Length: 153
Image (cartoon, rainbow, N blue to C red):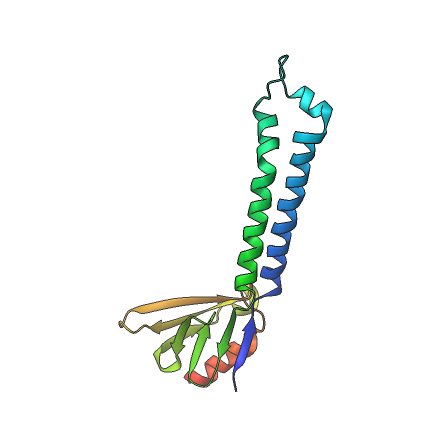
């Protein structure tokens, strides 16, 4: 039986907040740079040439909308990532596979207070690797940790 820990609500919410902030800033800069006559007049010289602030307010909106689209695309790509503890190995985000016999130690000292634990294992080359797993990255970590401890003892 595999235990899954999906992408955390904290991380999903942060992606949405970043997108909203970028779009609000884009709208604000667009209003000041293109619509608000008093702002345009205040930040232009006598001949109508814009100063640096007005130029920023005119060039920032497309960039901010582009950043919001990129963040949304990245969110779309990572939204399905999860941590899976199955019968033989721990699978992190569908990419990194850690067999249970390669795990040397699990440091769960900070799990209760800070929400993360560290897995110490040997990779295929024999090098010792430390993998930190945090509740800010994945939800449902307590059952995964219990399963890991049960599998390596």
